[in-house]
Length: 400
Image (cartoon, rainbow, N blue to C red; front, side, top):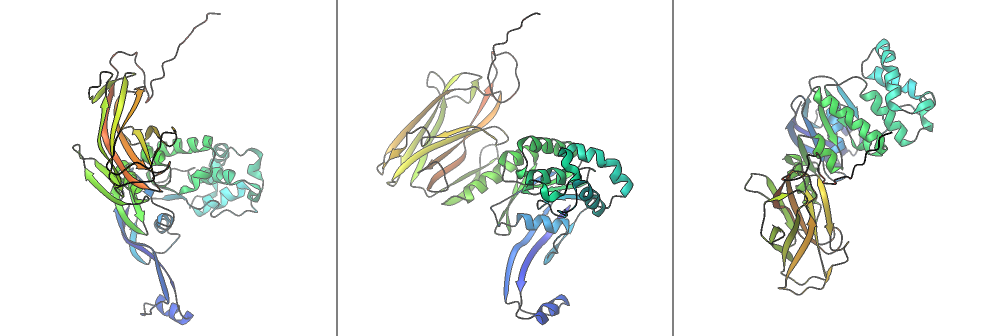
């Protein structure tokens, strides 16, 4: 799939004659013009999964509608090889007076499938949706979650070459979300290309090979999910944003207004020595030294530990632990010592730090640093286990 110079403008004219003249290519100047999307270009290989992220109004849904053909572009073009299945707006294309079964026939017919093939797949669609006897009741009686079940079941009844999913999946219950993502993963293994819009960081990181960040209709980042999501996280907070490559070539994001900064961060073992590799379950100390460069009314340190995919393993801050510093003086150097057992599974991890005034970086973001520290966990003396957490059980066995 290829998107080249794609743009969508919404225009209003002083008269209908000017609008009609524009249809025939005559130059007319609109009274108002708003570009929801402009100059977007990217390619997606077969079987690749790409997440589209950005704030509300960034142009994500507009982009998907242009790709599926439900909107006509003002400029640029979209090239797609193969059939597209899309779940955009909840209930889109469904008649509320029809039963779910009737809507399945209608929707699958619009997708180009013959009646015989639809009837052959009907039992599987009904079983996957799991709405019970409601399947033969008008859809106006359905909850939003039930509508989502039917929409997803019919859209994925036949494996498409390209599957496009907007934020609609968020309305489903936890059970159906897990079931839906399992089907999406199966399609990916079979070669389906995936485009997904989601505010769920873990979903984008676990499903996608790449992420594209839109801001005010402009594509500002295209790269690995972790670095793109880190940049987005910084973009929505106050202060300047910068990304630099670390020694391993990963893009580390730093943002903030600079009143307070992290001068030093280290992971120490039980003897107080800096370590880069830690044994599973070993006691450690995360030491963070913070310089107060300008007086601030309140200072909170937060940190989050992320796995190699950038998914959050554990995080907290001194607002939640009731240890915020009130009115620290300019020039003060504060040393935070966070002690805990390394009850993580083997793998590589990173630490992100935040210096803020409350429990969020969206109010006063003095400094946010991703990839502030990297370390690895190794299993040197524990029984073999899998996963990202070390929670050893006591197992008892009783013979009948």
